[in-house]
Image (tube, rainbow, N blue to C red; front, side):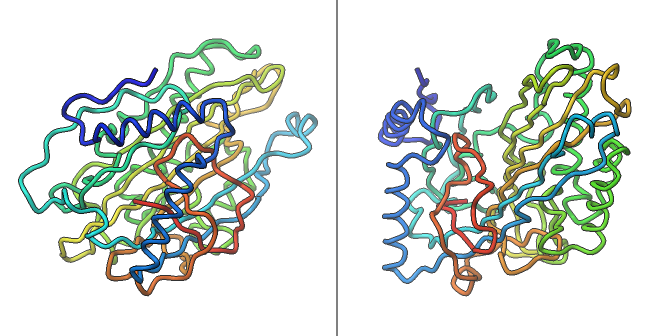
Length: 373
């Protein structure tokens, strides 16, 4: 049974009841946005269209990219090495009237109780939250207000032996996977566009082609080789991070992957509050979801480099990003830019809905929409 939030929560009883009903109805269903929520989003978009609000776009990453470079003993077993998939999204235009009352203009909001760590796939999307973000309270109006922040939000589970791979080896790989996720998505210098040296140094050097592709994308980004599908990077001449916190929600799991092999999956959503560089009170949020799969193998059977990770694949979504720019940086849209943003298409998605999976078959040539940021 789903526990109701504590008394300090900003979620109303009506919203919570609807959330619980949706979650119970959708348990056991395929990991996709519930039909009831889809109808709600459709109605919201219809109302916004009636008010003259035009949705902004989302850009997508490469549909598939082989991640080559496994040792010869690995290549004898695998005909396909893995995938690098990414999907980007930008925000549906919202006017203050859509989310008010409950903005930051009044007294300080009541404190909200933090959520317990995520240990399994949620049963549905979190309820809506009212209010607009400001520099003082950049997560107002976002479910992320109750999330943990920074590297501490990425908890390493206790390992056990899987498929002949020792618990100690898996524990080390879990720790290194966390280090990679943190270095790629939370390092302050990387967020402002610096080379992600620490993250690159964690990848097994035997993945030569994959590392070469990453470095080429960092030097010369293209639509098909965009480093933002692996590393979170913004343009410091355009935006600045607000405050010291990046909110994070997700989990790490370990599954068997054949004799002598295990697979770590790190699935995390990051919420970045941003303002225009040089001033201004308006805050926009970019939401990045990363799903990083790391291969852990028995060293007696498979080749690998100690102290490094073997990146099997990366999926992801980037919400609130100008879909017409592909320069290796994430470009969040602000209210004044939404009306002139690129055209969008396709079904709107909720970037906070961690009950759904990432769809690798979504059209990579279209701009889509999200229901909120």
